[in-house]
Structure formats: C-alpha cells, structure tokens
Image (cartoon, rainbow over all chains, first blue to last red; front, side, top):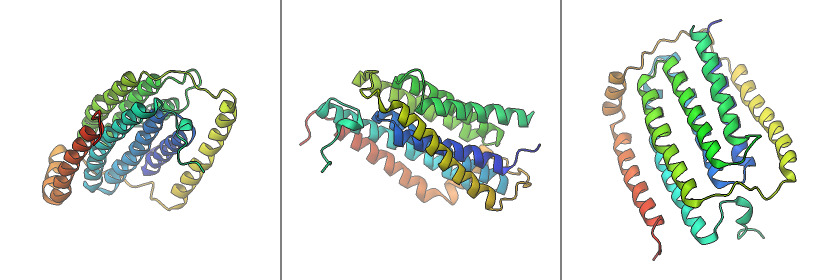
Length: 101
Length: 167
C-alpha cells in the first residue's frame, strides 16, 4: 500500500496529542517543555508532508523558521526555569501557587 | 521498502514520544530527555523519507545537538530529584491521560480523514538544499532577517534572566 499524505498527517496528529497530554499531565516543568517540543515537531512533520505532496518549498521554509523559533524559545524557557528555581527551589507546578485564590 | 521504513520510523517516533511524557518505569527527566533524542532522530528519518534532506540534517543538529544538550545542562544544574510527591493520583492521571489522548487524537484523525484530503496525491517535491536556499533568500528574506533579530533578542533575554541580581 502506498504511503500517502494522510498517513503522515495521522502520525503528526498522534504525536501532537501525546505532547499535549504531556503538557497537561506532567508536573515537572522541564518535562512540560519536552511536551511542547513534541508538539512543535508534530507541526513540523505535517508541514514537511504537505510541502512534499503539494510540490511547494514554502512548507519547508516554514519548518526552518519553526526550528529557529523553537531553539530560542527553549533557551528563554530554560533560563526562566533556572531563575524560578533560584527563587523557589522547585520545578514542580504544584508548588507554584501564588496565583491561587 | 519505503512503506516498511515509514512504519518503522513512525512507530519509533510515537513510541519514544510516548515514553518521553509517560514512562511507566521512571519519572526521571534525564530518561525523558534521552527518549526525546530518539524521537527526534526517528523524526529526522521521516524527513528523509519525505526527501527533506536539509531539514533532516538541521533537525539532528539543532534539536539533538543543541536543544537536548541545553535540557540536560539545566537538569544537571538544578539537580532535580526523581521523587514525585504524589503517589496517589498517579494511576488516576494515567487513566485520564490515556482517555484524553484517545479523545484528542480521535478528534484530530477524524478531522483529517473527513477533510477530503486526496490520499492518492503523488509525492513530487525534491526538497533540495539549493531550492530551499533560493526560496529563503528571495521570497522569505524579510522573515529570515527578523529571525536573526529574534535570536539576538532571545540571547539578550537569557543573559538578563540568568543574572544573579535583577535590577
């Protein structure tokens, strides 16, 4: 059976939901960030698949930009986690309750 | 051959992605980071199957090379303990996690299947580095420059955030 566009999109959807579930369920901020990376990667896969099957390079250019933004986002996010750890000595979301009513 | 490789790589991607967020044996973030490397490597394999060779190389270099090292470095810096304080809701959250996973992926897959995508489209594009570079430096030159500024801003933000005393 020929591998079509739909196959790649389904893999991408599954990976996206796995990442989303990680973001929702895990309590460790670092693992939550890894879930975010998974979601970005799922979007990348969908873009590359579309680009391949519709014969346009634009999707791949977009993936290039997404990878760049993801890299800088990770750098800033991890710096925030380090700054948070310095103040609160924790990376668990359960311990961050200052916004609770 | 292509079909077999697709199933191998996508299975690996999904399995390792699942182990990143919900490893049944350990809660250690280092293990998650290692499985994230595997996920990204198999995703690079999928990119090669889609003839996006440059992006596969970038994926391996930027993600597996830089991002994961950053993650591991921060984990080492923080010396995060493995203990999860709440043993009780663990099973409950696992059950609801699987349920949510099924619901969300079911919705997405339903949307994809019913959107009328032509699954008989032939793969055409040869994503050569040259074509990508030409596109990047003609049509997309302004976003490219903005990306440079974004990286600079990100770097400055990180330096500011990492200072011992914020003034």
